[in-house]
Length: 87
Image 1: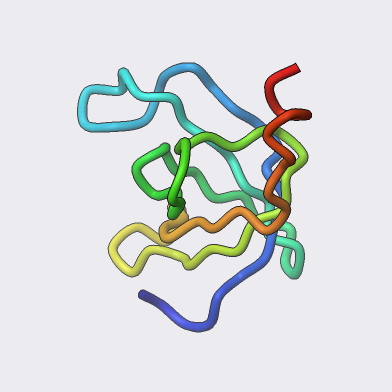
Image 2: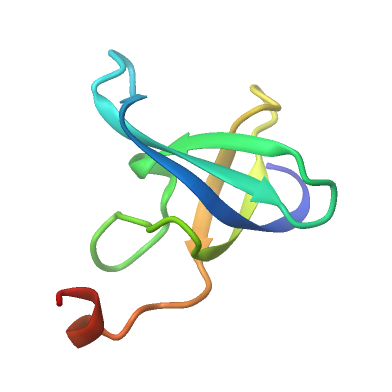
């Protein structure tokens, strides 16, 4: 992992484009501090439940050492209430 954790907001979700074959949903997070964009897919979401994130959610993440345009170890900061999430 590189450096300290970053904070950002999910600004886009694409149904494909992530994963080895590009068949996995991908996400874009915008860093709160420097406004840079980082991509990641559901495999980088650290959770005990569903590996999904919605646009507008706040997250904490690390920047990948191997690929500085990629986020990894993404953690949702505002867990939705399940009854609200599944309306």
